[in-house]
Amino acid sequence: MTEAVKPATAGARKVGFISLGCPKALVDSERILTQLRVEGYEVAPSYEDADAVIVNTCGFITPAVEESLNAIGEALDATGKVIVTGCLGERPEKIMERHPKVAAITGSEAVDDVMGHVRTLLPIETDAFTGLLPVAAPGTRAGAEQPAREDTRHGDVFAPSVKLTPRHYAYVKIAEGCNHTCSFCIIPKLRGLQVSRDAGAVLYEAFRLIAGGTKELMIISQDTSAYGVDVRYRESEFQGEQVRAHLTDLAVKLGEMGAWVRMHYVYPYPHVEKIVELMAQGKILPYLDVPLQHASPKVLRAMRRPGAGKQLDTIRRWREICPELVIRSTFIVGFPGETEEDFQELLTFLEDARLDRVGAFAYSDVEEADANALPGAVPQEVKEERLARFMEVAQRISAEKLVEKVGTVMDVIIDEFNDDEDDQPGTKLIGRTKGDAPGIDGQVYVYAADFAGAVKIGDIVRVRIEDSDEYDLYGEVVETPEWRPNVPQLGHFGKH
Image 1: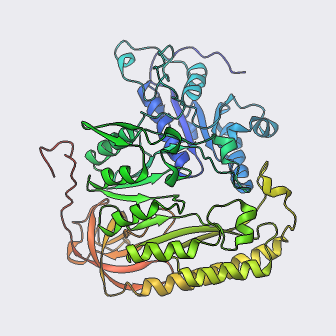
Image 2: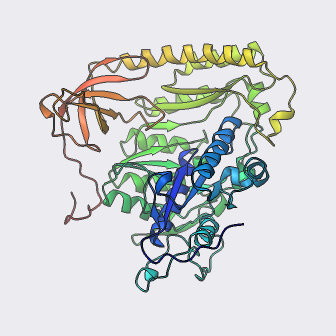
Image 3: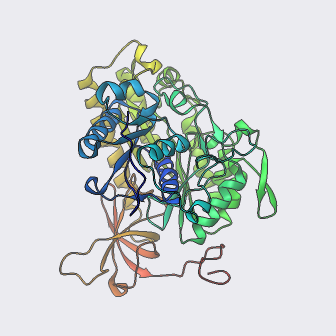
């Protein structure tokens, strides 16, 4: 139950926001924040300024669940008014058991429901002018007529205008949900089966982002390779053309816009070779985030993962097409039934595949996941020991691959300044190469040299690589070329 609150007569209601979890959840947060702004709410920068707090939770693995529950408790202690949404919201009983005083709970991708609870908890006066602003997603404004469409739950025509990323990069979600039945995963239970957005909606969102100064687009979904399967690759309009909802067609059009386009969560389906061909042609970044999870055919079958035993051949084929290809992947060690022989097979695969970017996790039970019932649980100390051995090999391979970059000149997108107190402003910078995604991959520590003060966050510069370590590169700016996308920039005439 929530207290009745009189409509605000002076000043906007302020809502705090906590966003947890993966980039896909971050996009959901951007959608909610966009709608808050549209309806006249302000986003509070701290608990002290917030009239209520929205917590967008993660519920995938046990540590993420605990982090979400702790965040809810902290927000309740600070404000007393908390709306919970996101993946953990699909398990309201777990939230209520720990925090029975939350104001409301919704599941993932529930912009409509979240906004309904916000309006109840913090009603504001309707303004004759702001009330005419367009809503951020179908049906989110109270009393709005639902459009005649098959499915609006996933906001298939909705592109958020509030970004939680810096101006120069953005995540673009092309589908929601997943059709796989991996034994360690409950995403289909939390987010449902796959629902793809129309290609036209995705492309118009990308066009708007690039026009506003975004230089790098991260394409995300639960299974990016399966984009469009659920809608039978139907066509939709983009700038007078009909474009199929197929990953290859989408990548071609995105590549024509002239920004960096980075592919995440790509399963190794046969048609991914066409995507790699586009990378070889310089249309999109030569980067694939492929969640392989393991290499032992026995373990992969227990995980119910596709492509067991064929991963190495696939990787070799991709690299033949595009030698510059950077491959990132994640793995699970200590899965139920994993023997030392299985683990050694994983290490051998890692040595043979020589993946560029690698992350790994020790297996932990996920509530309601089928893997919990599998025999052969691996003791925790064995999991941790295997994880350490795995990361030792991955770190060595990473260091060996990065040292090969020393002496080359690479494109680097600048994410932040790194000046010491005595430095001239803009002397030291931190950026990423085309082979590094933000937040999960390595960085380039850059000395601006003669370009000190002239390089801005978001600039793409040419850097001569002078040193490397296990994960990062070090270099000096040698050129600051002008960025010229194939999309007119806001505030300018023609191409810029």
